[in-house]
Amino acid sequence: MHQLTIAEMIRGLQSKAFSSMELTRHLLARIQQLDSSYNSFITVTEELAISQAEAADQRIAKGEAPTLCGVPVAHKDIICTNGIRTSCASKMLDNFIPPYDATIVENLNGAGTVTLGKTNMDEFAMGSSNESSYYGPVKNPWNTRCVPGGSSGGSAAAVAALLVPGATATDTGGSIRQPAALTNTTGLKPTYGRVSRWGIVAYASSLDQAGPIARNAEDAAYLLSALVSHDPKDSTSLNRPHEDFTEGLSNSIVGLKIGVPKEYFGEGLNAETAARVQDALKEFEKLGAELVDISLPHTELAIPAYYVIAPAEASANLSRFDGVRYGHRCENPKDLRDLYMRSRGEGFGEEVQRRILVGSYALSAGYYDAYYNKAQQVRRLIKQDFVQAFEKVDVIMGPTTPSPAFELGAKGADPVAMYLEDIYTIATNLAGLPGMSIPCGLVNNLPVGLQITGNYLDESRMLNVAHQYQQVTDWHQASAV
Image (cartoon, rainbow, N blue to C red; front, top):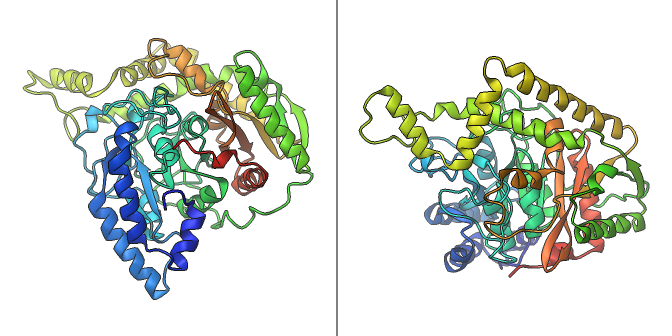
């Protein structure tokens, strides 16, 4: 049963070929048996999963079940879950149990899904390799000596290892798409504001966006349909008519204009990765699409702009973790200053501390205009590049990452080299656009991802394009286990 996609599970549950309880117990047993090799889960919620599966089977028996009813999922551990530890993979929140569900958890619970647990991640979603977790690194199911990508590496690894058919994740600078590329899964970051951020622990509020990781575009479409909603509790939530993202999957893409940015195929891109991406582009031409050469001239400025803006917002958001109200608190503080300093010094890991320091510096008196304000101006230029490109093309394609997965520890001593792993994904977040990564080949038996960037609110077209590619290729069916 673990080999079934979400679409196949839906059909099996509706036809009563198996029950949600059977499916849930099978996957829980698989997690217990195999996850010690991958470390993809922080918390497994067996008791909750059994009760939700039982309720789902009752709804199915009564003929009152929504489409996703009875389908198991997992949630990235940055997403609040009522009564279940939400740690952000940090010592700071190791003991934090939220008294409420995030809106997206409410949405999936309402759809009848079954929560198997909370997945591992880079601490506070800060990282590109899933090595900064307080609970240890996640290992890539394709090669356990390699990283799965970050920060949503636990969600991606759990899907790749067939421990769960789909999982929630968050993407601030590529943290859904990059691990999806490195684990041969399909990951989608929606347009900024499409999915409520309420109940998701904030890293960089103007960039964070939640979305699904699944095995293929059809499964991602089912999950996204449940995740998207207007939320009055989130001031950035878009108020749009509800969409069923599965409806347009089968549309023809004849005449589709695909923008291919020259900046995505220059220095720094692994030659074999580039070849796999070019092969994918040729498949789209066979499907009737047209390739159009475009330029996104400010691409090289995306990383420096991001690594001013995101740490600045992080330094403000993480100031609430002070050892006073909740989270880690140092023992026997001498005074209030000592309480703050030791609680934060003990509670935050090295990468989180680094970004808080960078962000606080960029926002400090005398440096705000030189760094933060300038970075926001660059952000506007990056957004304008995309606006102009989408006047000529329907979607933009290129590599998701510069190379396949690297070995654990290979870039730990060089933060800048680690930051460069997000060179192709960060601009999408700065512009607030939707983007996704789909499998498009293997290099040395490690997956390569093709990135598809859509225009604002154009997730349906993006999913349609990805699905049509997956109808004529089988890279997404290649399994790590």
